[in-house]
Picture 1 (cartoon, one colour):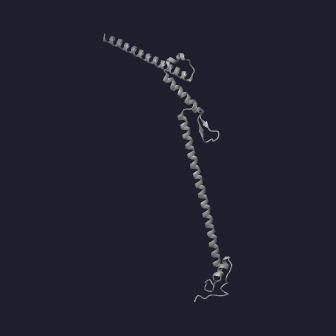
Picture 2 (cartoon, helix red, strand yellow):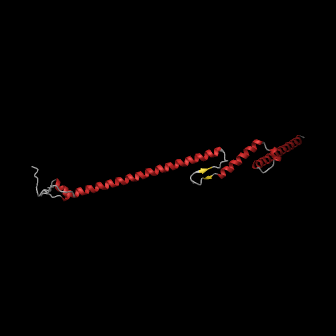
Picture 3 (cartoon, helix red, strand yellow):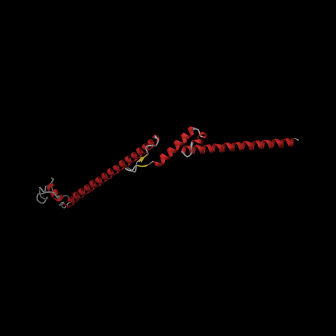
Length: 187
C-alpha cells in the first residue's frame, strides 16, 4: 500500500509541476504580448484600445528610445566642413553635447597636426641653413688652404709672402707685392 501511496503522491507532484510550468509559460506569453503592444503603441502603430495593457512610463521610455534612434540615424557630416558633425535640431540635448564634444576633439587633433607640420617645416629649414653654413665654411677653408698652398716658399719650405701677397693669392686686392719684391727677414 505504501507503494501505491507513493505512486499517487508522485503523480500529484508531477501534475502540480506541469500546472506550475504551464502557468509560467502563460504569464511569459502574456508579458511578451504586452511588450509587443507597448512597442507598437510607442511606434504609433496601435490605437488606444490596447493602451490599457501598457503602462504610460513604459510607452514614454519606448517613445524616447525610438526618437533617439531616429535622431542618431540622421546625424551626419556638415556640408561646409566634412570633418565636423551635426545633429538635427529635434535631437536630445545630450546628442548635441556629444556631437559638440566630438567636433572639439576633431579640432584639437587638427590643431596638433598643424603644430607638428609647423615643427617639421621649421626643423627642415634649420637643417637646410646648417648645411648651407657648413658648405660655405668648407669653401672658405678650401680657398684659404689653396691660397696657403699657392704662396711662394723659400728653400726651407717657409712661406715668404707678406699680408698683401696673401690677400692677392686669396683673390683680394694687393696692397703690397710678393716677398721677392721686398723680403722681410724676421731677424
